[in-house]
Length: 448
Ligand code: NDP
Image (cartoon, rainbow, N blue to C red):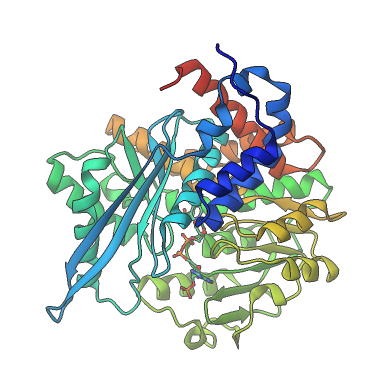
């Protein structure tokens, strides 16, 4: 192999900043990974010679397209859609679709990079991707959501497929939206194939998929707790968000005997002083599925108090589980949580903590930090089982899947422990373990 001029970490980061100067979140994710894996690169001339890090950090391609569709009143709406295909070196591109008014290319680039590393931590053969649109479904009718999904898929379909790229759900994309997207893909391709995951269980979906990210998060947190001699049982947990990941994490926490004190939305926080019960979580989930997003209206019904404008992280708890969106937990939140006795932060949302918060959490004495890349990989793992089901046209056994999910989370946890440069540094462990797998596959498959 011809030798390339070796670069140091600073030169690499400076070059990344020049190349992606408008991409704040992407640079944040890239920097976090690069700092952790650099010592590995310095010890491995092969990785330097093959320019693994430079090649791995850039997405394979970004597909950007317009999405035009018609509102109920006949007016025409214009949106932008994207699919960032980051890497298919470990398998077909795989990652969710996000519909949100604030979605932009940089956000999807960072999510696709994170997804590539997350998928590499699972034992499955999955590449990494992410996509979405700057479409805000709030206030849209069911018919409008269907027409938007169909218009979005009309543009996306040529770029995906069961062996090419398999999107799934993410913020504001649940089973209903996946149904409309899948229906359009099926009609366009004249093929019933597993080109999307997160489908309904009656038509190719996986029984545990919807709950898998939240449940997997709690399994990972329980393993990390046990490593410091603690159990989830009896501890109070601050959960942010009230969507898919938050509500399934809450359900699993309650089943493990933990006390769920909060769920939240963009407008404020619901607090259960003595902990929510299972019925409250189910009511909230049903209300959300029926289109209700105003948590303040539901507080009385679910036995909680409503706190307008309050962040969940302003509430005291033993454990914090951010499950809403990226950079939702900042350094001030992290410091306050630690000062008030919180001993674990386990991330359900991707890159839940800002760079400064993450630095603090990783260095704080006696605080366990479970990074999203590892802790929220349960969803994509079960998506992998759904893909296998679709390829075989067979059924899946729900109780076996629960065991599979636990096994995958244990596998990920063990990998993080083995690769961690110091005990309990799961963030570095996740980055290094994923990097090794990706780097070896890139070298084995040659430059191209
Ligand atoms: P949902 O759409 O089901 O729920 C999103 C939740 O986050 C809602 O409570 C929403 O509040 C809140 N939220 C959205 N945007 C913001 C914002 N800008 N500020 C504060 N709160 C916000 O999404 P999911 O539960 O599926 O996803 C949540 C997180 O988990 C995301 O980071 C996602 O990438 C990650 N994730 C999801 C996976 C999955 O399987 N679904 C897999 C792995 C990671 P409101 O209702 O008020 O809008």
